[in-house]
Amino acid sequence: MQGIRVARKTVAKLMKDQDIRPLCKGRRFPRTTDSRHNFGIAPNLLRRNFKASEPDRIWLADVSHVPTDEGWLSLAAVKDTATMEIVGWSMSERLKGSLAVDAMRMALQNRRPTSGLICHSDR
Figure 1 (cartoon, rainbow, N blue to C red):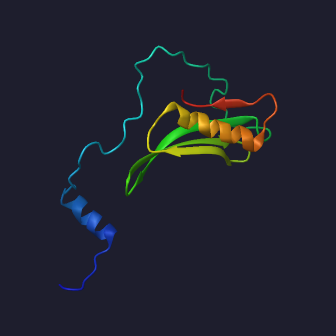
Figure 2: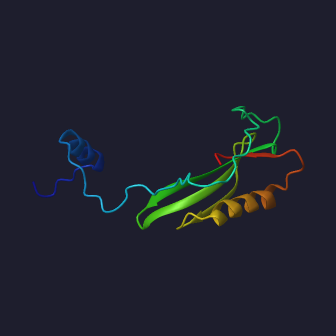
Figure 3: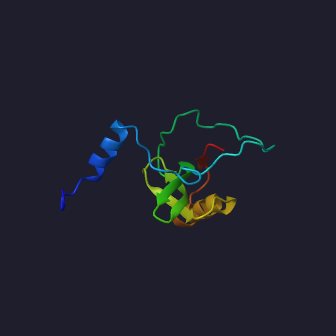
């Protein structure tokens, strides 16, 4: 069967059907949560009401991990709920506190919100 190309999805389906999994070296996904700390948890001011009446009133912040050919990258992003735009972001090879700070700093420099801004994150 020389010269026959098999689509990647076809190979993935055949592997799944035959319960074949690729060898994994190390962790498949990065470890992201360490709940062993004494830091307080901020009150949930939004109570799952994420609708903003105007821009720069409610921002959502989160950190995610993006697989690349060279390994995992950590991505912090800040999103305005009124415009649904990413107003600040930062990316790094390592998950560190400055990642979120840099994303928030970018958002504040880009938008310069007035008083009344609520920034919501999972921690």
